[in-house]
Amino acid sequence: MLKAQGQREGRADEAPSAGPGTRRVARPKLSSPCLGRTVVDDPQDLFKDYREKELEKKRNLYRWGNWKDGLILNVVGATISDLPADERFLEDKRIDFEASLAKGLADLAIKDSLNLFTCWNDLDDFNRIFWCDQSKLAKKVRDSWKEDALFGYQFLNGANPMILRRSRQLPARLKFPPGMEELQIQLEQELQGGRLFEADFVLLDGIKANVILCSQQYLAAPLVMLKLQPDGKLLPMVIQLQLPRVGCPPPPLFLPTDPPMVWLLAKCWVRSSDFQIHELQSHLLRGHLMAEVITVATMRCLPSIHPIFKLLIPHLRYTLEINVRARTGLISDNGVFDQVVSTGGGGHVELLQRARAFLTYRSFCPPTDLADRGLLGVESSFYAQDALRLWEILYRYVQGIVYLHYKTNEAVRDDLELQTWCREITEVGLRGAQDQGFPNSLQSRDQMCHFLTMCIFTCTGQHSSTHLGQLDWYTWVPNAPCTMRLPPPTTKDVTLETVMATLPNCHQASLQMSITWQLGRRQPVMVALGQHQEEYFSGPGPKDVLKKFREELAVLEKEIETRNAKLDMPYQYLQPSLVENSVAI
Image (cartoon, rainbow, N blue to C red; front, top):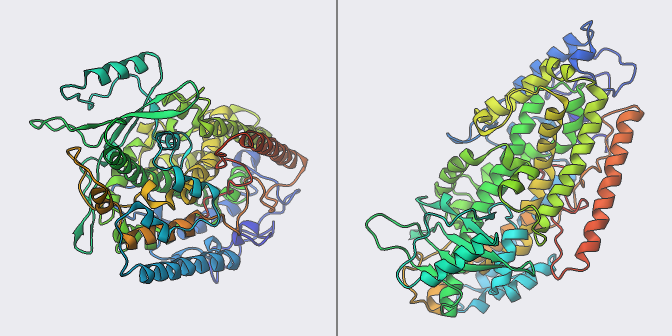
């Protein structure tokens, strides 16, 4: 295991490898070879030359790139071969990843050939391309996806728990056509009682939809209003699929009392919209790309002797390669999004550009994010409960390491490497995110702990909460259609034929299944949160902090298992044994 990350596990008296053929730089001898040292700990500049030479090499090796204008930055490199050797998958990871991809493509070819001349005109026909060997929940989704309770549950604990918020007023976009006065009264009553919630997909409004094999695809920008019942169920009250337009009649409002196919199609449009927002904003941007900014800034600004480098490095493993693979396969020109997703063909880039404005510091920290969205105290939000508990455990772990190496707030302010690292994330990687609340300097130990906890939570728990649910919720394609082939309905004249002509065709559904299986399956090659075997620190202090961290994770694991044993649908996406130690898939 000590060779698991190349440069990160070199000998204590050597600098990290800077690439093939690069001579290692001798490091001054330490009294303790893995003891973290800040510049403040080195008043005689014994390590200055080593630190500067190492950082110079790393800045040449880890350079900022810009995949598309208007996005946060990424590591430079068009293919995985452009990455530093130390950032590449090890053999076991590479073989598993590529073998699973080959299997997925082979299964896709088989399903396509078997269904080439068969009819595709009933919702049960999706069973022909459905497989869920690794997910009991996926079977339950298939059997119950039409139920309003399951539809609402997904906003709390599904693959994308990031869009729901408690309503503070009725949304301005919600225009009531004549005859809807009773609905307005009901919504006002739920609002006054604090039971009204909303999921607004306005970010999709005006995004250009994809054209797949000369066939126009379609997008909507729905608004869903939901009520929280005393039993914890979150039930939809009304769905609006498009924003009102000046000079046009208000768009129709779809209700649970509408004919079953009308209401089902409206919910399918919401689920397809959630698929787009989840995969691009919640998962890719807020998980993968944010972790990449943290990774590149850390490699460029912190020498391997720095205690914060040692703290962060286990949580940056494989992130650069998995992201380059995404940019060259999933979201590239002619990639999976272009082939099968309604935001492909350029819409996905525009959505990412829009979503950058919503990358606020508060939204990356569960205590403030959940408070802002009104989800604190919602007993049926297991995501909220587990995210808060995991954040608190991570904060104590970070605090333990920070307080060992920084005895005063002045020591934080005087650490120029640390300040450069913070500024590199906010001003460079995130392209001036100080206007969105991100700090461009760290002034105290507590502020530093909060920022570091945000970094680690983003690379672990937050990514896990938006990654692990894909297999459960997206393998039954009607529950999360990757694309829609007809425009959103403007009337309530809907039949089964309308629904089937709108949902993905057989090939599109099969490709969604294949990719979901490959990326969403439980990874056989993974390191669970806090369980890395590499010893980045020496001495009893840091080891005691890590030991305490693991003990607290074990307690949380047991608490989640005990709770889940009583639930019809266990929530596992923040269970420490399933949370990966870094964004590695």
